[in-house]
Image (cartoon, rainbow, N blue to C red; front, top):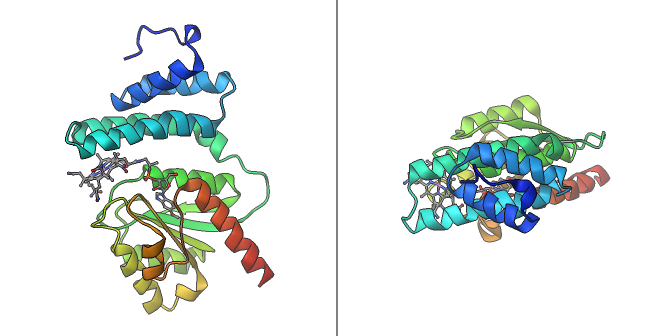
Length: 227
Ligand code: B1M
């Protein structure tokens, strides 16, 4: 889209507009250029994420829902989003030195959406957590095994589909069956998840977004330290 456009001649607002358009059309190389340029212009990673990448993906989500975009186009947009996130990764994962705890995360079985999960992982790493990412389509046994092996402070699960969200309950039940549930704090997140569902399945917290996941994790860790 922006092949012939000179970013230096554009305002910051125009670049954000362009970025959302490039994300929509899956122009990964352009997204990388724009993210780098906006960083050079002093825009914060959080602002670039919110005004550019996440806002662009929201537009994709709407047109996907309405049947205007189809899976191949959405995959291209996801690839562009990931390319932009990779530029931001070193900034988002920069630690302040202190070790906050261990965090295991994965997208539940049946679900292959990983952009939100990756973002949560990056921001938790930036907040000082050691992050173990189990990937996508993760069965309950793998979550249980990871809790047994890594003894994380917190387990995070992501689900983007109303059809995969109930699997979070299966994982929590599997932790109960393995007598590990009391050893680990369980967070759940993803677009269809909410507080009521988290409560219903006996998760410890629902996190609306990556920033909330970090805040909630810090709160639980402070609480844990106080005993
Ligand atoms: Co899919 N998809 N998709 N998709 N896809 C949705 C989720 C959908 C809402 C689109 C729509 O109709 N509007 C819809 C679900 C409808 C529903 O269930 N009610 C949908 C569908 C239907 C499908 C398929 C079934 C389509 C099909 O094949 N017919 C299929 C299912 C595949 C599967 O998983 N089995 C499918 C496939 C795909 C792609 C592969 C093409 C691609 C994923 C690529 C990838 O992830 N690598 C894709 C995409 C990109 C989307 C949308 C457009 C964008 C998702 C995204 O990455 N958002 C999405 C529309 C939408 O969500 N509005 C859609 C950006 C990301 C940063 O946000 O993941 O919400 P999100 O994460 C947020 C928070 O939710 C939270 O923090 C993040 C922000 O900071 N969070 C957590 C997430 N996980 C957390 C975990 C935590 C805490 C917070 O743990 C502690």
